[in-house]
Length: 261
View: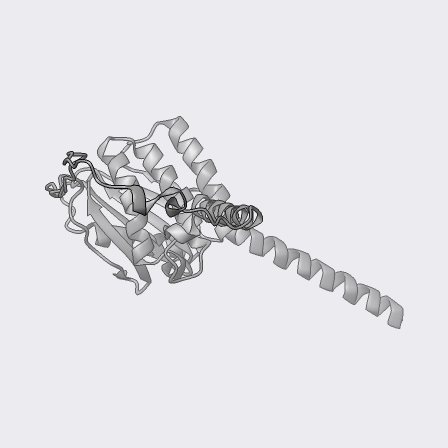
């Protein structure tokens, strides 16, 4: 009787664990749409490719990468549009972690926001770095490329601990390799210098001061040094930034930043 009860209890426990695991996976995998192209800026193939990229990095970061395009001339604030969309999406999908890029083609506004854990891993400074990369592409009409760049660059930045500038030159692999090569070259040069013996011969060794005199002098122009000063040009790039994070109407806080393009 006891063995039968234990067997039944173990089977029930295993079944519950399996159901909990499946439910947990489904809760995140249920967010199978990442692109909401209301402005019809992307082709079907571009949407499919972007969905694939967004799904891949969403699973890696446990954060959904979302894209919302609008063509609303009457929009008063892209931040409000973004916040309203996120509030509805979060309730519908029972998900908090998201990186949301909202773009209004009618007003030429773009806003990138990080919610949940992404509010810290993709803070305001990192958002600005991402915008620096994607705004030129958006100005050229390369929206699909800009959206994919948003996913890959944001995901790469999120790998660094909070507070670290991911574009710091000290973190670049090519710079670290250069430093290693310079150090290796210096060590080898030092070893070769010390292995060749000490040089004691100087110019005075072959100069007889008692039987030498100056027979003539002349001035010869050799070179000229010119100093140049770079005059900064007027900035004709993207429009000024705005935003900087805040809270949605539903009370969800976020990091973020926006630009004109």
